[in-house]
Image 1 (cartoon, rainbow, N blue to C red):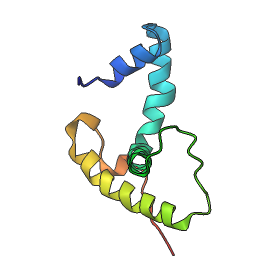
Image 2: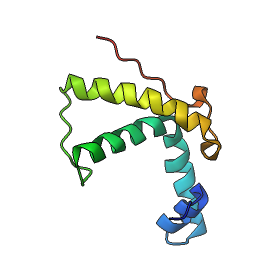
Image 3: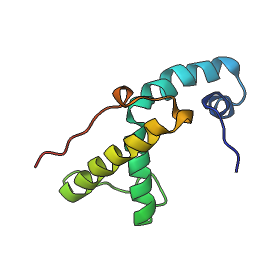
Image 4: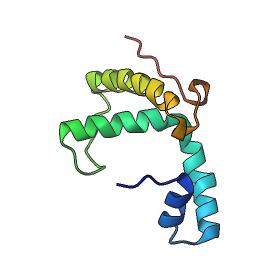
Length: 100
């Protein structure tokens, strides 16, 4: 297992094309940083549930699923901000609150 920088990921996904890698970083990686904790929460939840594909068919009326997702994303936010590799502060991330 090897750790990759955002730049290395962008270059790999862009087939080594510098211009495409720059565009990918500007249009995909940077704008998605505020929701990384939510993306990780969804990935962990799906892995736990045994989903393999992205089109797992999320039921948008599943209140329990969304409740768990908000709770998990807020817990992950603490860990992501504590990890220097992410270069994120709590105020950089969107904050979700579950209201019943």
